[in-house]
Length: 233
Image (cartoon, rainbow, N blue to C red; front, side, top):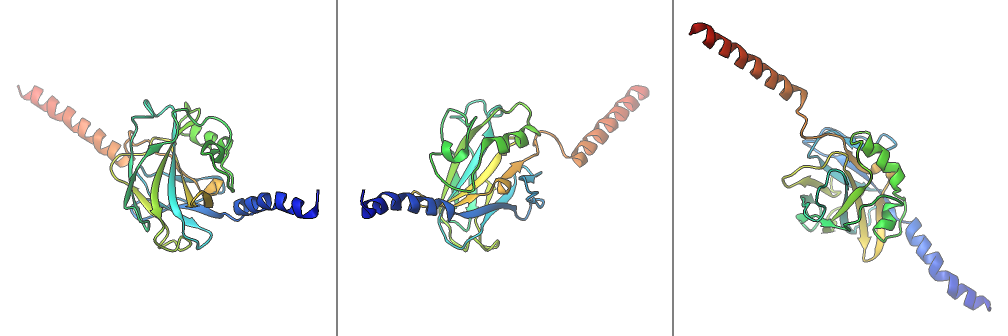
């Protein structure tokens, strides 16, 4: 084989690898009305449900932004019927509704392969599932939903103009994960680092300590009122 033919064979492979290697990294963060959530080197947990959050890029290149939700499979009774609407800022679409990727849950391998994509940094299931199981022990995988918000409208590297999101009603299933992806056509411009994904650690069915205290006080008050009524008869 001639040198020219060898170059022609390997150039597309090298170019593809460069596209994957040069992808910007995205990291989740929380915004006002949500307590600060911090990348702890493993994940970015939030104790607010619903959270207000965003994704900041390591680069300034704007792309089409897609939000990815991994909902624990034990929390979703009917994956096709589950629906969530999310509002976005600093993106061209003001809101987006969840689209189910597959009725087959994500239970092995890597998220990028499950989505039919190729990018780095990688998002392997075995990094995330133990973290979800720490708050939702019965989860064995995730149903995956995407939200397309169109083009980014600000500088994605600037935390003040990076894409931010809030739930338009509804809550996140306990143990859910949120990822961000940036696209230019089929090319992935940016992907979320393993520790940059946002993990929902709060079960909204469990009342806050202050709420529980008020409920307890109300029950005690009712008890004494009822007792007083009985004594007065």
